[in-house]
Length: 194
Image (tube, rainbow, N blue to C red; front, side, top):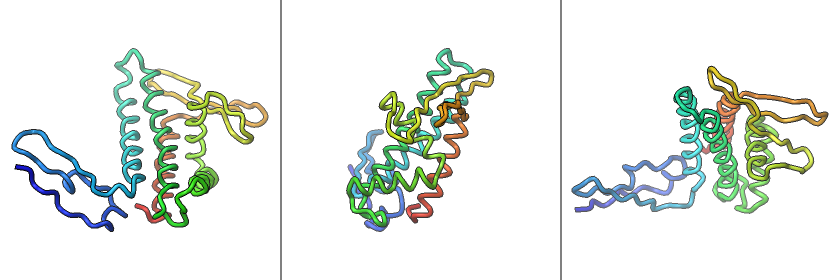
């Protein structure tokens, strides 16, 4: 017999990520159904995916020493994290409940500009994501950021890019991921979203 999910107020979804216990009905076996009754705040789900991908980066570093594909394994985890960070900006920008948003592309651009200007680690993550997506970036003030170094032991990867005068710059990818998570948490707390 399927139990009815407990009712959850809309205010709950404004500030909290729904947990499985909020909307799950369990049957007599091991099967279940998950119902998300309110899809008005998809950025919340994307934030959970960003945090999950952050944990996957840790897991990749933890088991990389035993893998033949260590470099690809680390690159995949780090780049998936970067891509999810870019998606989170889009999700936040289209949410009219976020202060100052109109639910338009202008809102997305405004959030992206604020994050890249005021939360430096996210600027590097977004440049890496856009380089990954487009291969070579030709826009003014954009950087072609790629994972350019792999070293072992211990296994490490680093982002690399050239500055405006052609000088090579490198930054450890795990440090970038850690700093980006801290920047996201500061931004979301500042906006009173978490």
